[in-house]
Length: 452
Length: 178
Image (cartoon, rainbow over all chains, first blue to last red):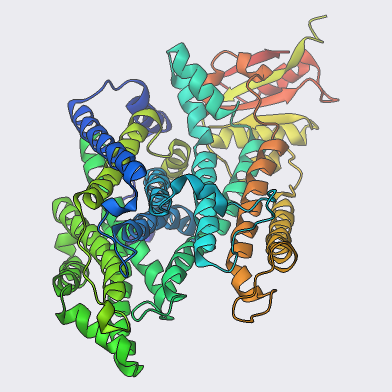
């Protein structure tokens, strides 16, 4: 057939041979039939240990206060805020994959959107911890919530930190709704496939009586599209607002108009890196190569390269504006970043996010899951270092040389960071085991469309 | 008396084309109260069963406007009347710094309107429904396509409707008890 010629070069989005029943069977089988595997138990156990470590770190923090961290004056923002920005950025690719690609009618999102959305939620949970822990008196966190209290006090709505509260809360809520609404039909599939009464009851409650009615589908699709249309600008706004925490300050290195787009680009970049970090082992461990094909992985790699190049451009512009702007404090800070006490972090960031990234230009690298996994890990590390660098170097080298101070993370800083990584994987392992990791109904639709 | 105890008659099909055709035929034959049940959304099916246009987008717009006005109003009331605080002589109604929260609340209320509007309009959550009693209906979320003509349809007549559905070449036709 001549008219299919242009498509022949592209591998299919789903391996041939899938039917409606086999898609539903394979995905629901992961939850309903597959018993606990060794690699799952091992991963879950490790993650659980790290969660325990996080619990200890938080308990000690509550008991002794933020003094157990390496923060001081003037470096009052240390790992906690760097980790916050990093985690919240990781979430962004999930929403972009599911919402933005849905609006753009990109079919390759279907196999990966569910797990990417789950990643968003779990990353947000980790992110939301840090500002709370950093408060010093975390039990007063509810003071950020505006409500007409007896003291007549309101939060300071002009403060970026209150904007953050609204941005993160809205993002968490909308991401959850988007994830859940998309999952309702699949929960119904699980309810109908489950044999165990407890499973049937649980999924039955979660599916809310979904029965695939054409009327319901119509409203469901409308609501889903509307949510996507709402979530896409939300992604941009959340990290822009996070970046305003920095840009609204007058500290050199922070007070920069490039910050909102720069942060958003970095967020999406780290998010795509995390999607690759999660999906490559997931498809191998659960034999999902037929549904999450190499085409998905390669397209993700291209997105990683594209967003990474935007980040690289931002690095260049940041240095250029510091030099061209003629502000001696800005330029002094930039030189300090490149040659000062924290210079190794700067050059490591350049190596990870600029140097290693360029490997993705080679199609061979993009077609190799092991290489991609390694590059994604490097990108994650690079982005984390970049966030920490932005937070720390500006504070440690501000206007007065008499204030210049070093920041050294303590063991509790590391424990909290690694603990949230554990929390993230703990939630993700639970998700793999308890909920459909791939959108059954959307892949079924794709199977029918591709089969034509 | 068994006529009254009937919710409708349901036919089961193997492909989406068949259920789409069946719905179009039923509508052409004059049936108005029917519903189709499918594992994934099928384009044109809701129109074929005679689904009126929905106002969900309007509801979301209204939600967004409420969120926008409410979000800004909250900040205005708090910062101008409730707790006026002079920061370097700047105006109390410093609206540019109210924009981020206004935007976030707009999105939040609009999204909540979309989800709850969808659920309420669809009558969900509804754990029990007569169609669940049909044998084999659990495959509606798996790999089968169902068309149900409801007893409330003015043209509904147990045997005639059943014969009509059987003529559409389904794999199975069953009564749906109330």
